Structure formats: C-alpha cells, structure tokens
Amino acid sequence: MHAQKVENHISEILDADITTLLKTRFPDVYNRLRQEKCTLSEDRVRAMPAKSGAVTLSVEKNGRNLYLHSRYDPVREAGQIADQYPDMEKYRHLIFYGTGLGYHILEFARRYPDKQIYIHEPDADVFCHFLSSGNLARLPARSLQSLSFGFESEDVNGLLKKMLQKAREQTLVIELPAHREIFPEAHQAFSELFKKRIQERRTGVVTNYKYQKRWIFNSMANFPHVLHTPNVLMGHDGVFEGKPAILVAAGPSLNQEIENIRHIKKQGLAYIFTVGSAVNTLVYHGIYPHAACTYDPQKVNKKVFDKIVEQQIHEIPMIFGSSVGYETIMHYPGPKLHMLTSQDTVAGYFLKTASGDAPPKVADAPTIAIVTLELLARLGFSRVILAGQNLSFKDRKRHADGVHYSKEISDAEMKKALWIKDVDGGEVMTSQGFDSMRLQMEACIRMYPDVMFVNTTAGGAAIEGAPFRSLKQVLKEELTGPVVDENWRVMENHCYDPGYLENRLNEMIAAFDQHRALVLNIRKNLQTVEKLCRNRNFSQASKTYTKIDRLFSDIKANAFFKTFILPMNRVYYEMLTGEIRSLQEEKNQQKKGQRVIDAFGRFLGACDKDMNMMTKVFPRIQSAAQNYIQAAG
Image 1 (cartoon, rainbow, N blue to C red):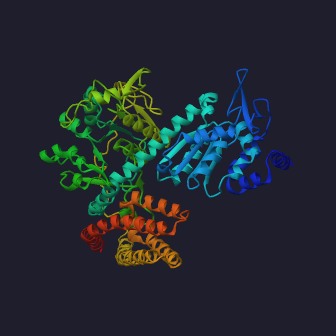
Image 2: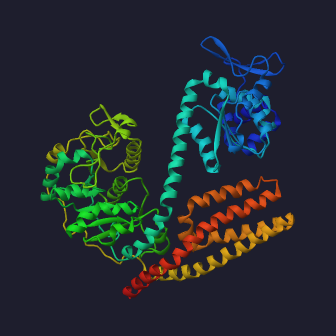
C-alpha cells in the first residue's frame, strides 16, 4: 500500500513520458526516487519565471537566493554555454555535471546529435525539478547513455563505471557554471573521483598495452617449467598451517633488521620469503631466505637474480609466477616452484588437477609484494610479518644495501612527492606509485581477516590492517621457538591431470586450424564490403556486415583465439568492440563501410603478427605437453 502511495506521488510531479523513460531505461534511478520520495518542495530549491518567460531555478543558501540559470533568459544562456566549447569534433562522450533544468544539455544535443550523453546531478532536489521540467524526454533517446543523481561517491562511481565501460574516445565534462559556486563540496568530490577513475582507467590501459603480449608469451615459454615443477599452492600438505612468515622487501629500512633476520633464519623461528630485490640484500649479508618470490613479466626482471646466477647459488628456492619474464627462470641455478597467475590463460586452458578442479591461481597485482601477501595467506600462515616494506622515501634511498642496480630518488621525484601517514603517526614522503601499492596491499589484507599482519618497517608508510611493531619486539614476544620444516619444498612435480592435458592439446590443434580459416573468411568478406561500397550497393554491404558479425562471433568462441590471440591483443580488441558499438549509429553508409574495413583491418593486422610468432612457439607447447603425458605413462 505504501509503495502505491509513493508511485502516485511520483506520477503527480512527473509526466507520463518521464515516468515511462525512467522505468524502462533507468529503473535504478526510478526506484531510488520512489524510496527517497522525490518532491518539488520549495523550501530550498524554487522554480520561478525568468524575464523571458522561461523557468529558472533558485537555491536558498545561507539566507541568500542563488540562481542556477539566468534570471533573464535561461535559453539564451544555454547557447552561450555551448559557444564556449568550439572543438567538439574531438569528443564523442559528454558528461553533464549539474543539470539545473537541462537547458544547456538540450542545446548541446541539438547542435551535436551524434554525441553520447551522460548526466549526473548531485543535488536530489534539483534533480527532481529537472525531471519535472520534462526536458529529459526531449533528448534523443539514442544519445542518452546514463542518468544518475546523488552526492555520495557510490553515486558518482555508478556514472563513471557506465561511462568508462562504453567510452573509448575522448570524453568532455561540461559543468553548469553556477553549479560549482552553489555546491562547491559536491563539485570538489566529483572532480577528485573523476580524476582518480580516469587515471585508473588510463593506468589499466597502459598496463594492458605494455604487457599484453609479454604475459602470454611468457606463459607459453614458461609452460614446460610449470609442467615440471611443483605448484606451491597445491603440494604443501599444511606444512605452513598456523606458522609465522616474514615477507622481506628491499626498502632501505631493511638495513637495520639484518641481524634480527639472520637470527630468525639461523634458529628457524619463521619462514622467510623475499620479494623483488630483497634477495640481493640478504645474500649480500650471507643470509639465504627460504624462498625468493618473483612475478614481474618484464625482461629487466632477470637482473634481480644476476648475482645468484653468477655465483651459482643453488640453495635458494625460487617461487615464480607463471607469467614472469621467461628470461628470469631460464638459467636460475636453484630449485623452482611455481604459482599460476590470473594473466596466464595458457595454463588456464590446458591444466586441471587430478580431481578435475581448476588449479589455484594468484591474482594479478602491481607488485610481487602484494602477490606474495596473497600467497602466504593462502598457504595457511597465521602471521605475516612485513619487513623492509617502506613504500616511501627514506634518506632518498630506493633500496637497502646490496642491490647493485639501485639508484637514489631523483630531484624530480622528490618534487612530485606526496605526504602520507607513517608508522609512528607522523608524515613521510612517497610517490604516487608507492601510495597506489599501499592501497592495494591494504585491500589484500582486508581479504584475509583470519591472518594477523604486522608491519615492522621502521620509518615506513602506515599500512592499514598491519599495525606497527618493531621486529625486535616481535622476535622477543612471538617468535620464541623453531617452526621451520626444512623439507617443506619436497612436493610432487607432476600435479596436473595428463589425460585432460592430452584432450585439450588435441582440441587446441583443431582450434588453431579453425582460427586461420575464420580469419581468412573475414578478410574475403571485408574485400567484398570494399567493392560493394565502391559501387554504392549498400543493401548488399549490409548483408555482408551480418556475415562478418557471425564470423567474428565464431572467432570469439574459438579456443585458440581466446587462449592466445585475444589476451595478446586485449587493448586492440576493446577498441574494435567500441567501434562496433558506435557503428550502429553511423548513418553515412559510405563512411560506415570504410569504418568497418578499417576497424577489422587494424585488429586482424595486429593479430596476424602474433599468428606468425605462434607458428614458431606453439610446437614447443605441444612438445612439452606430450613429454609430460608420456612421462605420466
């Protein structure tokens, strides 16, 4: 009964077209309006006639009436706002922050009907007046992509998520000029969150572009090593359960903990895992950790272990992520164990456990420290003690002693530094990258509430969820007796199902041939489109688009494409799918045909290069798989 009253209340202030639009296109907005009882109360926000006869809005603030639109001619003002944006050809996606009654949104839609429109109004009362004006229903339905309201960060996040899912070209934020002055807090919160989400998006795209080929090429090159080394997450048989581990990073504060770590190793008081360059510092001081963990897909990651290779140190086990730079593990002299990574689609396709389950993986992360944090928690350690995890600038040093390739923090880096909270409650300087790592580490810690995390990094950044205690104090109060089983790394090498591997290998060989045939067929159809458009036979061209769509659907379902080609071209794939979506709105048939040819041509051209490489590398995967199958007997 109450819901019906609210429904009636909404219908009293919104006309039928707006109500239908909200119900069908934006049901989340409609339901929130029902719950929050959208009203046109004039206690704060008032609609009143302007001198031109149009309606304007005033907002009462601190005893004053402030106007969101001109008191004289709001429609003319909307044209003046649009005049301030002359280079609109550069943009496809327009975010309107602050609606007022929507005059400026209508003007932009009239001038630029091909643009995609996203609307957000932080003030609920203003939003209700905007809806009641009926201007929302006057916008072209195909242009309107998103509608949201609210001041809270989750409201803005909803808008940005939808925009970033669709937007591939440049995006322009258009603000209602008076809105910033009247609602400064909401504007600042939106601006900061918008910058953050765009930066995250750009970082993700850059990371994908930078590593998309290395991740898969490494996974292919490392596949023989994966087949013939233990999966550390599968074969430990609870040997670490309830015990403490020390995660040693190479921050400069590690220098003052060397003797404590030496004592812990000698007495077997905790398992010691190094991440990144920290293995060099410990080896420099004559301490061999229980394992050195590595994950970085770049070729340069190899130099972390150069000294160990040169000195032929055989006593330090390496735990490598399966998508690590393949050069890192080629000549490593010590024993090796692996952890499958979320970027490794090769292992994801070929491998199952003996019980038929997907083997466990660690999630992708910006640094090996975060990957290892997850690994230690999943191995069953009850306490994880962080050492050398500065995540900040200390004495302008980047690493502890013994890291032969370390360089000091530059003047340029110091100028860009941020101030954040340190472990003692004061402040410490850090970089944007270090701070991002800190936030990701905190997120990882929150995922494992049953594990006790302690940060012993003197002078380092405060890490939420890992309270600071000195390593000396932890050693005295908690690490009081030997816990290390020196045989911990004796695990079964052949931990994957050979029968499943054999079946998947046969399927992949067939998928390889099918993929080549599908690509050839698409290319023939693109040539057909070119001829038909040249002859202005657009009806037949349209039928050919349908054939190309079907062929592309078959390619997307192809195992070879999904496992190898797509992950190596994920950025190009996103660009192609974004272009395909926008092609639906292209009215110029000649232009549409050329865009189809260009979009698919670019994508297939990028994929062709990887296909040529695959003809050389795929036989190695076949050989490694066949050897594994034969050895299993």
